[in-house]
Length: 496
Image (cartoon, rainbow, N blue to C red; front, side, top):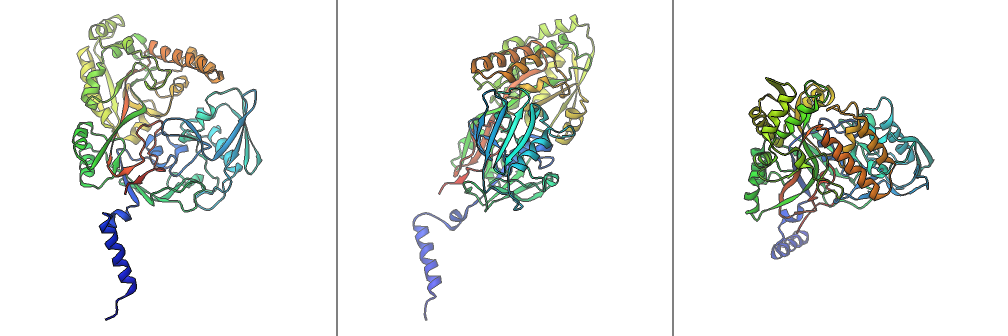
């Protein structure tokens, strides 16, 4: 009987592979399933405030002119280079040639103009519209060159363009991005099974270096117990922001997994509605701040992971000032301040979004506030409800949330921001910061801004959210730190 030469060759290859310890399953592993606790409300980074949008899409599907690297540096993206005029007002960007959107349309300077004009328009729905406020005009020089003129100097402009809210979209597809996103990135949209997962496929026509994975699934698991089970059974390959820190020691003891501990940009705060009585009284806000034991919250909600903060700034930033002593835990001082403010029998609402740090931390904070005479009514809300009721409608007294946008202390200058501060003196500090280009002067102003909001007890500052990740030990290339709210899969691969 004559052997089939093709079959014989296949058997030989398989035998060689087994001899080398390479199984067919190992050789074929070109996909990854990534766990996330929150599902994005839509898939348009330019039209929503939820961090989960960027966690799925930033650098994977959508790209901006610039982007954040894994350690927070600003890197070229769709702009391959740029020049800045001597007066700091004109930025001329040289664009990637040959880049295409996933629907086959060409990327060019017209798309940049469309995206930036759309983001800064009067009717813009961009959650970070203030990033674009200093743009006076966007002009197309030629298909590969665009000129952006600012109305005033802004030392953070290239930084601002790296945010997920500043990604470049096309006029042909922008209106549909919320459900079927079309970008220029190395992955393209495959499907969104609402309530379960978003899937991305490798973009075969990507302008840059090809990614090593053919397929990525972002699986949404809100329950920490279920997240633990999914990792243990292999249903997930990684959970970059693992929601159950109490289980990390078990993963550390299991050679199948790697535990990745890093830092994030997530300033976690007990936010207060500064225009709602009696929280419009600084003495009451100060009393609340002194009623909070940060260590108890970090130990109880994060099992010891997390860094205490006393202002809205990341401790790993060189300009950080440690102001935790200014609002140290002192329940007796808290009671005295409430008496000074003439506040008795105070009841405040505390609306908690789904993350475990908020739900667990909220119970601890409520107990601490009750100890000083403040009654707390807790309401657990889903993420969409938090965005509509708290973030947009400002219908709250207290809430707990982690602000994961990079170096976002500028939000305190916005009159319409949900905690409603907008102090003129703080705005003046931020205006000076925008104009400053000298590094020492910028540090001085950033530190002044930190001190100002701490002095005004705008919010109660709790901790910097740690980046506690778990992954299959053979999955490499995940970011250990989180300089922006992203699960960047562009450098992820399976170790052979």
